[in-house]
Length: 195
Ligand SMILES: Nc1nc2c(ncn2[C@@H]2O[C@H](COP(=O)(O)OP(=O)(O)OP(=O)(O)O)[C@@H](O)[C@H]2O)c(=O)[nH]1
Ligand SMILES: [Mg+2]
Image (cartoon, rainbow, N blue to C red; front, side, top):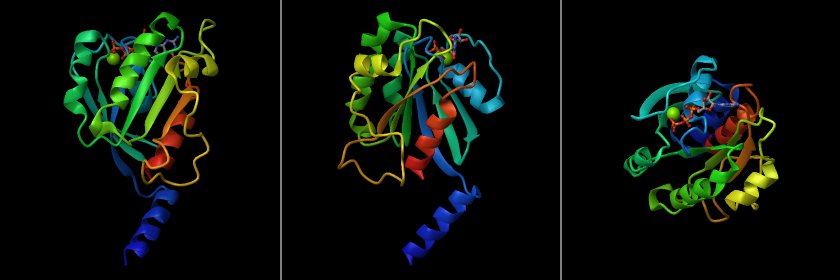
């Protein structure tokens, strides 16, 4: 019987009548643009938020995803709280400021340590290279190299992802939140993987 439900569910999803609930952590160094992204996704407005001190938890719809979004601050003291939120997570969105090359190694360290957390093992990681509206932004290739992500999952997802046997889904998308560029494709990728 379950295949009938699976089929029905996938039809509902593809028609946009059903939203997949997902708990998603928005992580990355301070100043990367996490809160700006969430405000844009929720209200379609570019704001210049204050640095996040306390975690913000919000519910919003992005395409077929109904997100419980956890926006955790990225400065060093706030990072200590990240570990408190890693249970039952469906995906991590890791935002990087592509203009801040000096901090790529720090971003890599944080990303690597997230990837080594048992509770997050196997879940999709969407890495967003933000601020590509700036002339000093890195290229996608440069960012991927700096983060050690030369061999990623692939942007062309044909079917939902089931297990981690063939490598965990991690992919890099370049974007400019303030210019509303790039992140829609990225969330579509995530949505297809999670459906
Ligand atoms: N040029 C440019 N600036 C951006 C973009 N997205 C965010 N910013 C700016 O980057 C700065 C930091 O943005 P936030 O959203 O507060 O960053 P955050 O990751 O939430 O930072 P913390 O809360 O400290 O962890 C703000 O001044 C934003 O206006 C973008 O796409 N392009
Ligand atoms: Mg913030």
